[in-house]
Amino acid sequence: MTISVGDSAPEFSLPDQDKQVVSLAELRGTPVLLVFYPFAFSGLCTGELCQLRDELAEYTDAGVRVLAISTDPVFSLKAFREKEGFEFPLLSDFWPHGATAQAYGAFNEKAGMALRATFLVDAEGKVAFAEVNSPGDVREQSGWKQAVSELDDEAAA
Image (cartoon, rainbow, N blue to C red; front, side, top):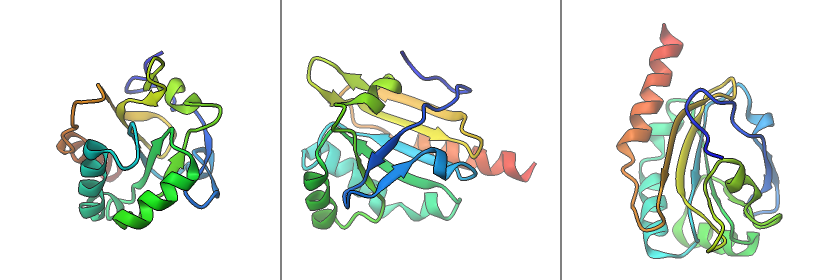
């Protein structure tokens, strides 16, 4: 199943790198950028998340919470976050393995990993932006930023 713009975002509760459960329902009222990625410490994923880290203010200044999600266990995510200095939560979709990625249509069943997928969920829980890329395709983050600015435009209207 693929999630499209206008759909209700599937709910989830996942542990972060510190084993603290983060629930999409608890973030209702705030836009949330969900960034699914295949694996911690892999080259392309590290590059994408480091760019996100370096440009995080563009999202947080617009009131958007950023959550990165992979099928890695929490221990790997903790080490990855500490090594790279990420200031956004890294959520573990480890068990049931990839269930959240599957709900978003962002899971590679054969490889057992999340795809490179990005969803912007508005304050009401509707998907405002959706992009699913193949594992080797680096995402262009300008589309995410455009979607965030469109949320701001709608809020101002």
